[in-house]
Amino acid sequence: MRIPVSFMLFGEKITVERCEALLEKDSCVGQALYRKNAIELQTNTPSVLRPSTHIEVTFLHELLHWIFYVLEEHELKENEKLVDTMARLLHQAISTAEYAEENPDATI
Image (cartoon, one colour):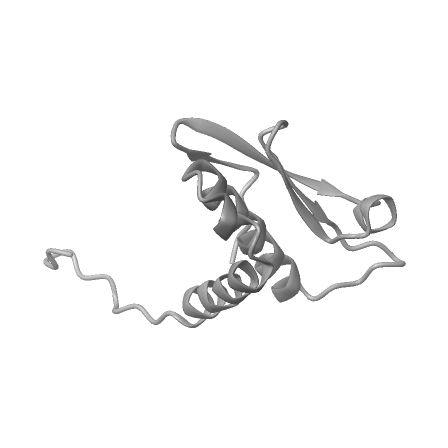
């Protein structure tokens, strides 16, 4: 799975920033920054090594926080169990998806 450098939600551009000291600075590996229109993700450093799948799930976790934020579903946005479970399920669906061979005659 590729993590974007930015994406749009309801016409707002959200940037994805890699941060080497996020874990040390804020004791987390990802965060949604609503006032900054950003997501920060802890990058791998010699002292913090995380598998790429963990970074991908962290991105999806923060993306879901953003989605609930723009939907003004603040109770859901604060529900870490729901957000984390949905991020893991989305990651599994995306990373295990199987696709048919490309067919120029297909309608879908």
